[in-house]
Image 1 (cartoon, rainbow, N blue to C red):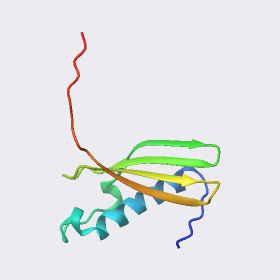
Image 2: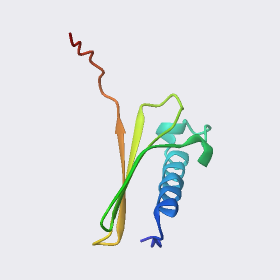
Image 3: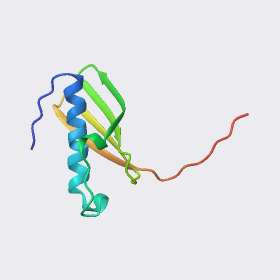
Image 4: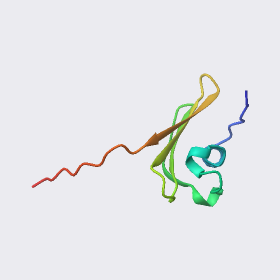
Length: 95
């Protein structure tokens, strides 16, 4: 088990970016075994801190449909990385 020290918003965001880079670069289905990303290839879409919990939503400008959600649970002192893929895109028109 990996232990992470949490000290503030900026460090949490950097930790989330590091984990997305690590995940992408070690998941052959995503990178095809030869395409790697750096920290600069990851952008933060949304960030929130509520009480002792953090949530960071991240994406990459690469040609993948993956979207990343990094959550730190302050009660349990553990973090989770969820990876989502876009399944559909429907247009909803309003008048």
